[in-house]
Length: 400
Image (tube, rainbow, N blue to C red):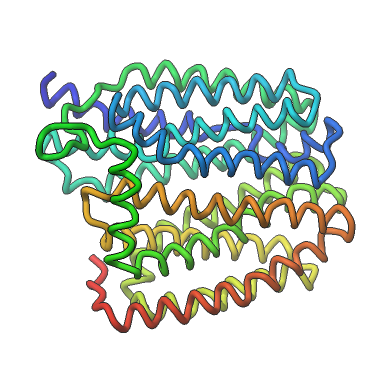
């Protein structure tokens, strides 16, 4: 395998990212489950199944990528995605949908880490790893573009036929599987000095050792993942909220697409904003802007512009904090700690998502949004205080 061959992984990754991110069910899966007879409590529990699966399988699927190859992990992820989508079409019960979400979660787990590792290792093999930031930025644009297409087109299609949106998604997943087959497996992988692949015990012990030596990583994770669970929960339940206000599916998809566009712009401007304000000021101000957006959603009629503002803040913090966390993690433990970060998000979502569904089912969406705001206030302010204290004690490198 020559460097020219392996380098082709990079341009191939952009259409693959777009295809794998194009899920026409994105804007309507909660509406679809409600249409198929699921209550909001059941929908919340089904989403919790997704996060329980992610929690349990994040590290094991990382081992699959390390031991059997990044390309193999991606291929398995595509197959799991197709099985999950197919089950969503043919199932008609709570347990059928729950199993579908297990396969969907596995598809994300198998892609998580493996995709970035395949791209980065390909660049290393070609001696062009200094291009990774630029490549990652383009990949994020492809992903967000896929989200916008999914939300707008999926919403329009679902206005007429929910099932058609899932069937078209299944077809797109099949195309992404074909593209995935064209990737080359990099020779460079995660091995120890003796050339052995790390096992499960090494992954777990490595995580705890690095976390013990650098507690600041935990504070960053608490801040960004705590913020993320409130944003994700609002994003999903907002579908049903808009439906209850008389919006049709294409309108719901358009609103969510505008949020994705705001997130994409926020991510694109994050570097400039951080450079202008500085990391500390950005961390100091962002929780208050986020809480203002949550309050507008809970207590006013400005829910749509507030959701767009929330998405922009989320995009900025996602890019900024990804950079900060990666700077704190030694290279040999990067996949392990990023898996731990994903697991932290799943743990929090397992508890929050069904609770908000139960509140919305019994007392209405506005009360549920108020609960989100009330929960976000102490968590974001506490994590802000802890993070600013951590940043004072550890010199932060300037934004590059």
